[in-house]
Length: 283
Image (cartoon, one colour):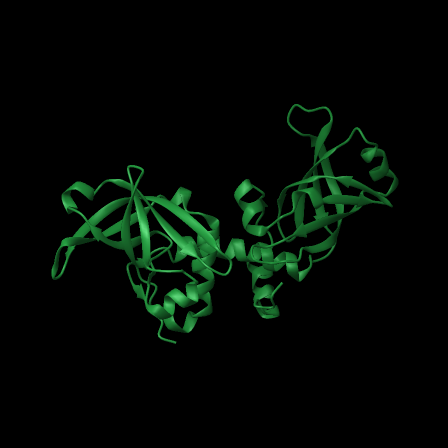
């Protein structure tokens, strides 16, 4: 990991989120870089492949095949195991691998399967900092995307650089058709864009905005609805449109990008978190 998160920040993550469990959906696997083929539990001197169903900083639920002698092995080791995690976060070249010592508290058939069980593991110690950092970034972004959802980041040249957004020139998809636009601001809950068009034909229309990031390269297409429009002074054919995102579909990777930029510039936005406040950084 890049050392960008301090030990103090990791302690904050641990204290704030230690009992919050994250389910490893396809999106969470993607944003954390979990290498699912590299996950297993070590029991005694033997290894069993498993799937991480969910995890917090204190425990985890895993799914594993029990037709391989695993239950008998657990009995022999008094239910003590080591859970091997492996992540390659976006933009990182090397994988991060570590073991977390744990004890199996419970096991039960997974769904209707007779071959697979769901195991509940209690960690024996605080997990490694790498794990807290990787999961903490996701948890922090998720909390703040709700708490600060109306803080708008003006896309000044300075803020573009800090966010690693490639350009204010972008595309908005209206009824599936791409239209050129200029990004003016972004928030967890929406974006303001400028484009050619007639306001009465666009307000209340569904649309999707594309936002391209660099370092690492990522592109997010976020769905929403145009909720307001106004003429651009001096340019009769141009309108400024407010796009409200469909919150349920805002990508976690986008939330993490915004959250880390805002959090790293806390002094700039302190006292500016009221609804609709704008965020401008001149540092």
